[in-house]
Amino acid sequence: MRVGAIERPGSLEETAIKNYTPATVTEAVLQQMQSAAEQRLKAIVESAVRHLHAFAREVNLTPAEWLKAIEFLTRVGQTCTATRQEFILLSDVVGLSTLVNTLHDATAVEKGTRTSLLGPFFREDAPQLPLGGQISSRDKSEEILLWGTVRTAAGRGIANAQLMVWQTSSVGAYDLQEGDGAAIDYRATFHTDAEGKYHFRTVRPLGYSIPMDGPVGDLMRAQRREGCRPAHIHFLISAPGFRELVTALYFPDRYLESDVVFGASPELVVKEAADDPQAPVKGLSSVHFDFALARAGSADLASGRVGADPTLLGGDLGVPSTGG
Ligand code: BEZ
Ligand code: FE
Image (tube, rainbow, N blue to C red; front, side):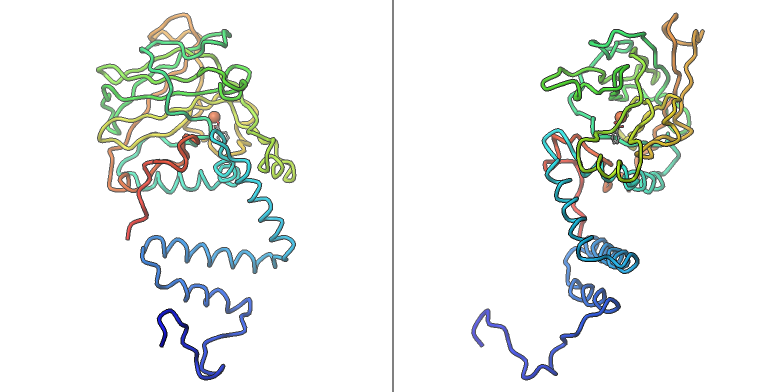
């Protein structure tokens, strides 16, 4: 036979061709995907196909509805830019980011502080500040203090742990939302002292709406959801030998129970103290929170971070290949 030519069966009866039905097409697809080289990739795609087919059968999806969904997903992709990740936002509002986070939390070798979403406004390049520094420069509203310890699960302080911190201003906008070319603000990087202690000054963040001017916003309106997040301050905390902690502290407000991205949880809700005698700076309203880092385990070598600095997507996110 000529190289590359397709061998023809003698008759139609000899072929395995079938009239697919809603009941048989799934199995045929799974059969054809059997030879995938990477076992983890194979397992993930097989399961995705099984669940996608089950979903289409369950809702009796029509061609027009499927095209509408494809149009929606196309717009999600087209809305992504170097600084905006509409797919992560979609994952957030359908609770998938929180689900993946909680699955990851369950693989920790010991109990650390609960995680929360990284969100779309994280940037790797937050300036380094000394302990006690004020992270807000444009917003001059009332200063508050955040302080505490980064410690092990057993309660020992971790010296020189890195804390990356970012938040909205007191009117509910991240620096990146304050207009083209707005300089970095309301974010900083700190390192704990020899006893694992940290403290910094900031302004009180405000709850805010997720970006509503794209397809995810249209979905929110169609679902009659407010699309708002409670006021919070994000933290990304790391130290050699420990699982990286992506979390946030939440300030009580009316969006706490209806957080559109399901990031808030009771252990992360803080209480401000008007004049805490223990606080390292006196005279400021303060929030005390100790973070616990779990020791790194084998899951940490292969998991990656839920969410990313959007400017790095498509580049090296430190996410390993699915393995063979
Ligand atoms: C945020 O925390 O900033 C955020 C998280 C998910 C979606 C939108 C915003
Ligand atoms: Fe946020």
